Length: 184
Ligand code: IMP
Ligand code: MG
Image: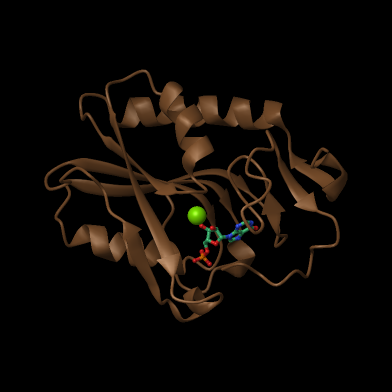
């Protein structure tokens, strides 16, 4: 059984993702030359993007991971999120690039940024594959954005709906989900 039947529209093709990741990798390599940055991936959604982005960055860099959870199904709406798994490395005096799958309201990222800033990194920037500017609820500065997308619920290339569809090699819209209960 394939997932493909559940997808009503391919929003961003595998080829488009590959081309954009190559561009982002080149830009990040130029910006971080000589800085040995840490790419801090936000699990689980950022995993696929991180894996491809890291290989598109030829300069030396490290990778690390953190996982964020909410206290309930819709509590990030109130900004109540917590760190389920923390970075392994100390980021003090290090150049950190946060790697996210998607920015929706921006609350998850704002929480992570505030938390990581207390550890005094040399710099902290954000790289997100997808951005939904129509949904931003708080001001957040994004340094690198793969694609700006409309307010649709998307899956694939790491993004899930109830833990499914992360393995799709493209970003697509699920059948009948334009008004799905948002998983934020
Ligand atoms: P925010 O805190 O509202 O910015 O929510 C960000 C998180 O919600 C992301 O890291 C995703 O895990 C999830 N999310 C938001 N929009 C989508 C979507 O369209 N598809 C899948 N997950 C999403
Ligand atoms: Mg995420």
